[in-house]
Every structure is written in C-alpha cells, then in structure tokens.
Length: 368
Image 1: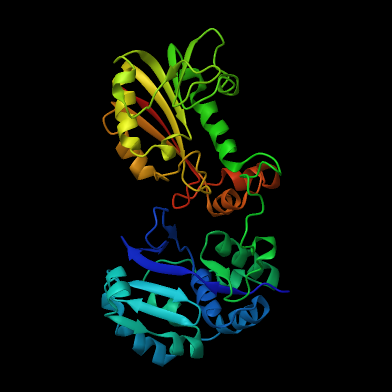
Image 2: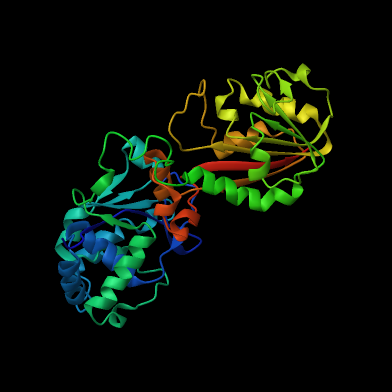
C-alpha cells in the first residue's frame, strides 16, 4: 500500500530565522531552509498521498500567490515574533501567544480552509524571511519523494491518520516477557555495555558494588587483582557485606575508591538516600558509576519503585563535586525495550540514535 503522510510540526520565527520546533521537547529545533519544505508541509495538511501531493506541488509552483491570500496574511504578520504555526491533519493554525494559546484556547486563528483552496499560506506567511527558492530544482517525482522522506526523517511528516502499519507490535502482551532474553540481548544491556566502554578505565582502587553478583566483575572487565566487595540485602555466595544500602552505618565513611550500582536504584524506596550514603562511603576523589532504566517493564525483584529520568538522576548526585550523564535511547528502542525486542533485531543505527525525550537507560559518572 502506498505510504500516506500528514504534517507534524510547529513553526516558529526566532532571530529572523524560521524553525520547526518540537512541542515540549528537549530536542534541538530544525531550521526550515527553503520554500519547498513549506509547500510540501502545507500540501500534506490536506492531500495525503505522495503522488497527488506531487501533482499539486508541480501546479502550485507555477501559480502566483492569490491576492486574497496576500490580504489575509497581512492580518497576522505582526504576530509572528511570538506566534506558533501548528500544522496537523486538516489544520493550519496560528497560535498568537505561542504554546499559551495552544493550552488556553485563545488567539487561535485557523487558516485550514483557505489553505485547502490555494496551498499558499505558509510561503506567503513567511515570505519576508530568507528562504531558498528551490521549487524549480524539484524536477520529477523522485526528487519530490527524496525530499519528502528527508522531511519525514526529521519528524516533520508522519504516517497519515489511520494508516499506521502496526504489524507485530499491535499486541496487548509483550513480544518477549523476559526483556528480550528469549530472543537475544536486552536493549538496556547494550546501553550498559556502551557506558562501560566509556568508564571502564576509571573503575579502580577499593571497589564496592551494590546489589551485584560475583560474575559481574568479569562482565565489567575489572582488573582481577582489584579489591572488590559486594553489598547485598541477603547473604549469598560472593556477598561480602549484608545490609540495606539505605543504612549509612553499615559501611565506614571514606572506605572505597569506586562504587558501582547498576539497575538497583529503581528497586530502592528512597534512592536519593542510597546516593547520599554512597557519597559518604567514598573517599575524596572517589567515583560512583550508576545506571537506572528509564524505559523498561516493571520487574519487581522483590519490589520496583522508580524510573528515574535524567533530570531526577542528576539531582540525586547533586552533592558530588563533578558529574557526567550518559543518556541512551530513542522512540524505536523505547518500544523495543518494553516489548522485549532484542538487540540482535535492531541495527546499530537504530540502537545508537539518540532522542533526548525518549531515554531507555540513564547512566552517570559522579566524582566526590
């Protein structure tokens, strides 16, 4: 079935430059470089098939701007420094007060009907800005398709409403109930390995691991001769200290050079207290290496309290002298993590792509 599209964009002027911004997102805005982008986004508001959109594009680029469009747009030119232009399925809306208008439902100006008649609203609205006039450079449908696919890859076009192909993902149970272990390597383990490559050489001295097992030392590739002790709630093979990490008294202050705590803090009822205790147990200059899942199924072993996000994680380590966050994930790997799709089923490009709004794993290196 041929792919169909709708726009998925907020346009905003800043410092005399036109940008597509991402709603309530930490993602960097994308510059809108040319008139072709605006024309394509506007056409797909109304006509969703690529072939029909191309026919309209070819016709539209030859026609002068309609006088009624010019007169209508003059009413809104003074708003542009503060306004957002929202593009959606069947809708081209000016929010005069930016996101405040979106939320408060005031100073909203709908131009969708006029847009459907002419497909000329966006180029005229932003005609005073220095956009490349590249309409004639798109000479055939393949040129058009490549540009549409590029704009889609930036997140400004999406599959048309009702046309999403869910495939194997449209399930009310996960593809693998064991994080992906029935299929291969869990996604969060891939990100832990990436983090370890970054920080391995800094783990040393007298090392404490909280919530670990003896085999972890080999996985982390820590020097076999290093002093390495494990703290756990329960006694067991290789456990050196039995106790609750919430209790600062179980370890003497300034006892360790390194502390490792991977995929444990989400199981702590007050993880910020555990982090404060780690700070106490480390020597001056000592380092903590921590990871929490930000997007993973509930795994109550024995309980599962939290999914600390990057801002919360950084706050927990606020008393450390230095800290560096490592955040991994994107929409594809969030879905993979929740569904139990394995690393081996994804490409390195899919795994390594980063989107700040979709963390799967959040790691930190913090120095006392």
